[in-house]
Image (cartoon, rainbow, N blue to C red; front, top):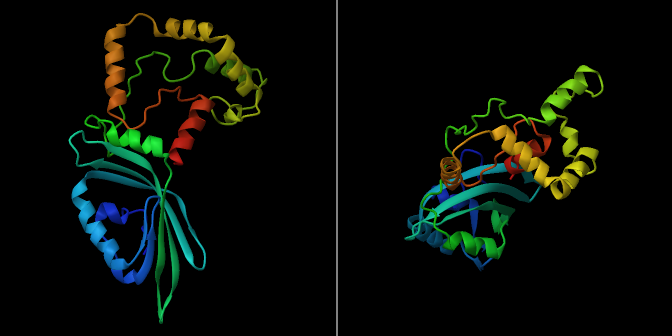
Length: 250
């Protein structure tokens, strides 16, 4: 009854194994709860025309025990409304298994959505005409900095420290342990954001050099609008790496 990595959730693929469910199965989501497989099938049939584009990705491993199966997805939907809103949030379903006669079937189908009511309403009424639902097959590299994607200040300092055996090499350009909440670099990062912001802006301007600000701003705005989530990062920064790992785990 449960979906897997190659099978999208039932409301996206339109495939529903009715025989896997008890006729009196209880269906519930954050807004409504009812009993009856036939009603669920009717609701599913009516939903298809309301979704014009969709994408789903499995999040983490399925959780299983003797009588339950739990799976979580990241789901993105484009709705058939004039402003083409795109909804995107983690969605999960828990199947409770039981006996009906001699048959093992789903007796409870419980959905949960990891999104606040405020965020859900905001996504529903926001125009999604320029938003992408399906991830791009290629990632645009907007960096033309001759120093690459490494931190232009910290990167060279780490190389020198390791060359002098003053810092252990963990195999990463910058130690990933720096991103731990109790690390000294983490505390210094918080301090610098508060008290050294002007210096950091000076360093960024120095590294950027001369450029057409209007052209770059337009390019950045266009790139952001074309993606569901956008991060501009140093590829070697442990804080940036940790942030991207957290997003990948969603």
